[in-house]
Image 1 (cartoon, helix red, strand yellow):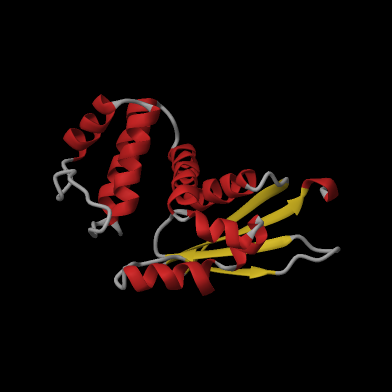
Image 2 (cartoon, rainbow, N blue to C red; image 1 turned 30 degrees about the vertical axis):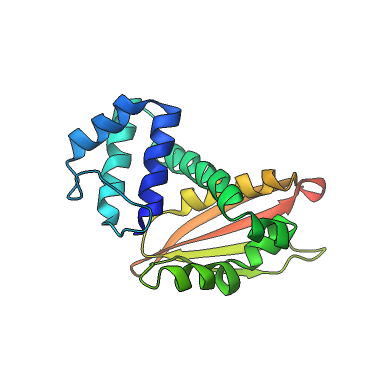
Length: 185
């Protein structure tokens, strides 16, 4: 997993809790990396998972809540660092449609070894809501949920977001159904 995820996780922990919590996570999980991460490095996903479990233990907050919070944090980072993608898209649905065919293509140019989740979508129409499908080796659908909701807020849009998680062999899958609030039943 790319180091940007790890560096931003540590930033989130420090900003939401404090530096002592960062030290506690590193001390209590003893990551192989020693807890020294660079944005361009690659690290074992299990280190992040272990820190999430420890953060949950330390704070009493569930893994799902922590992952959603982290997704929201990442969205704020992405809107600053990669503002061009957000400006060019102009809306959350337009951005979500670009994830696999544009955004992840650009990520792969910079980081050819990046292991990215797959996204596909079903177009919304007057009878059916927009559906965004997530597929990954890693169980990060709650992180995606946080990213999706923060992106919707970034564009000052209003959608009810429902998620349905599952497994397909060794892959974690999730369908996010986005219904415009004005039309929600």
